[in-house]
Structure formats: structure tokens, C-alpha cells
Length: 97
Image (tube, rainbow, N blue to C red; front, side):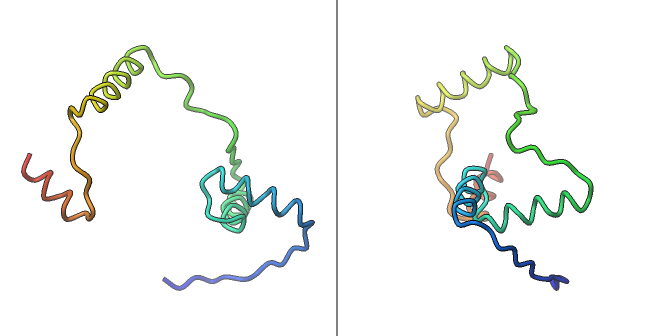
């Protein structure tokens, strides 16, 4: 895939860079650059990103019961599959169900 890219150099205080890198890692980004790319794209598209708010809310009582039941079964080894090391291996297992 060919991308039309450019480089943006921004002088920034080292402490700020380190804190930004740390926040990016906490949010699941592999680097501050990846975090900034996602933020910049959203800004350019007039979208608002909120990484700190949990918009999912609280699960319903039915969902809580279902999740707790699944967790308990997993602890007991029920309804748990073996690990898969390739997509093909997983699909082969699913085809046999």
C-alpha cells in the first residue's frame, strides 16, 4: 500500500515526551508517534477522541451474571479450548464442532 506521507518535526520538552510516551503505552499504542497519528487524523476529520472516558457504562445484571458464570467455568476448565498457534489450526477446530 502506497501512502502519501510527510514528516512533522515538533520540538518538545523531554519530560513531556516521556509522559506522552507513557500515556500512549497505557492506552495500548506502541509509541507516542502512533498515539499522535491517531489524534491528528481525528483532529483533521473534526472528530473528538476520548481515551479517558468509559462510554460503555456498567453491564446489566444479566450480563454480569453471564460474565461471572463464564469466568467460573473457565477456572474449572469448562468450555475452554486449547491454545491455537495459527488461524488454520483454529479454523480446523471450529470446522469440527
